[in-house]
Image: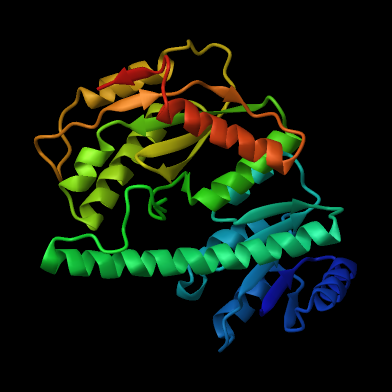
Length: 312
């Protein structure tokens, strides 16, 4: 795996190079600034497989560098891991918002960094393959009206929808927030209750566009607070929101009801999106395992409802 590490602290670059070599990653290139890193990314003939970026750098910080790197065609799916001493929630939010895959705070555990590198590379490869398969699937469905290798349960990544992450990035974000900033945020699952009907009567591309419309509606409904979303599969979205004690228990259901009342969706003119809102759960976890359990709990509550509010 070819890695580019960027940090304005030469001692950190030397340490990272030593650690990565010990992990078996011998093709490591370093840059001392964001501008130097962009030049390397633009001029290299062999694309990098992973980027490690510091956040706090002069002239161009790591968050801006991440955003610029994502604009380069070769780095749409490349794992970008922030390796930084900045633990404030603002920096975590901004990093994931511009396309970071993961966020590691210094000082870091060597084994933890090694695992994150492995996970990020594997997940990026899986996403690239999934998107290419979806494109091939759409081409086939235009001809045969079947959905080869595309299932209702598949997660979807809406790269053109600001604030909507891939499932893996969302999980990494939730783990970081739940373990470093407990009780500052909450998670809630929302299910498009007629997703299966829509899936059965649409092409893969149409279904993706309709779910993207649903994701946009959810982000619009929650735009008054800091909000991020992901599509889990089966018509289920997950929302990570800043805590707001002034919000009523029914605030999201009411907003979605208002949006649903506006009319049908363009791709299926006789169909309106309907939603079921799960219970809000505070993000507080002592470990990554606890944080992932919270995500699964939110999904279970909306998939197998006992009291959730259905709107639409």
